[in-house]
Length: 409
Image: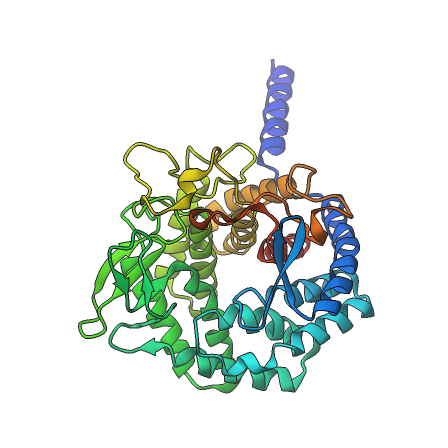
């Protein structure tokens, strides 16, 4: 009898151990992606060097480039820095330096909020890996430029200049988008490196205002909130890139998980951690998330109770596109969040590894020589403009490489 009980106990211990183990993405998957990146980016680098513009996506079968003012410019040198970090090969360091330094004049750019994307992903990674003092000075000036878009009465950084709403019913004069959470890392960095708390103050105020007005009761998120600069109050809550004003744009939700996780890391403020956790739970527990964990471009496309504005060109689409870039952003965020989330950490790490496993297989990872030199297929930029739908996106590549480096570590 005792022998039988021991056997049964051992059996259940083995079962518990098997299912309790954290399944990580394999080193083989990581190496496949970075090897693919080396092959793809060798071609992309040659092409970019000729154009001296930043590869962003593809259009009509060709690489789509953008100039220095575009918000995505920093992802290209950022991806090159990640490739150097993984391979330690001088060729990628040289390329990353070259392309980072083409962005230098953007340190004075005050035209929009995306200077964090443009400068921290390029110069920030460059400073982290080389400790080049010139990079530090450029990052500090970039943070000063970003702060010029902050309004103390509103308590948030203005994302865009005056912009018509998606439905054309009003003009937004102080629009703030959920994406803006990502640019706060530049401000936190500036406070740490200079000792001047003003940058951190602005970052915290912005995160608090986003927490107050961008989140619904279930911790889904609005894409855009427009503010009254006299009262500081929210006037409109709507979408620009999501399916409907009351729907959840999946990349926006991923930006939120990432941004609030980073804000908790930089402040230790449990409110930000709680927000990141609840936004993450909304995303990964959503019954409309496909089994491979790569989301549609919006959680509520064609769902009852969600009406797309008549002006949205997404109504022309005959299928619901996925957004692999949203998945890559989320995976990177979840890997960091797993370190702070206590007992939920295993769930977040497991989900991140499922996403990364999906993104590194043939359904989403391009074969060398294909996809115009980019890594990820099946990303969606702006479905409401039918722009970059089911295309590669450089920021999708960037966050995929970042997430894989986090998984490796």
